[in-house]
Length: 392
Image (cartoon, rainbow, N blue to C red; front, side, top):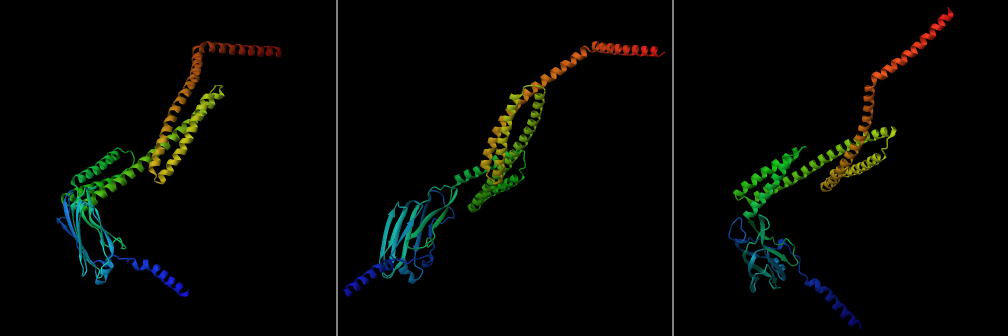
């Protein structure tokens, strides 16, 4: 029984140790020899549709690395169209596995477990440069994904591709963005000095991009265009901020002016009411406008917060809401002012009628007044004479 238990224990230990023994050792770039890819044709920049061939060798760096590099999967990938692969696996002091594959953008190369390890993997790939999404772009000829290895064990092999038509379109797009913003800045009624500084810088970068492109300095041309685009985008943000801030200040000022007008109108309505005029409905209309102003004041407070936090889209949305509310307030205010003017005109008309009446009958009224004064004076004089006669 003891022997059986001992046997089972040994078997279990063997089973447990199997995965660890069979697991491949983690490798990295230090295990691979330096290898320079051969790319044909030998040009600095390629065009879309060009036929390209790349030859590359994967080799161990040292004798000890030969065994570390075998018994693995090497997944090779390319962005070339219509790829043709010719691959040879050369085992050290051993045989060679060679094969060819067409029209596959990913190939799994299995390096077997060999007694003396891997000698080298020879890769020959031919294909055509694909369409690129940008005017200047790197295309991956060959990339590597190796089982149980660091991702950067083997660097991808790339070529630089240029599309002249796309460059002209990109240049035109950036120039249009520049001109559109410049026209807006020219017509601005607020301070745009910082925006103009950015636009001047963008104009210089566009000029440099054209010059670099004409000299086939595409890296520099790309950097200059990117810088110009960035400056224009920053200028657009600054212009939007200045425009919204200016509009916000206009709204605040107009709200203040309307508030002052309402104060005067309320005072005038109170005066009419003291004279016995019925202005209840006008006061209701006035209260409605005052409520609209409260809403407008709350909206302006929100706009101020959004501008402070640089949340310009929300600030612009609230400015539109404020403008709509203010338009309604203007209409209501004009209607109210018109009604108040009518009452004021009526009151002035009554006063003018009285003045005209007084002017027209002033002579008669004056005569009557003089007559009354004469009678009073005569009566008083007669009374005084009687008293004087009595005393005598």
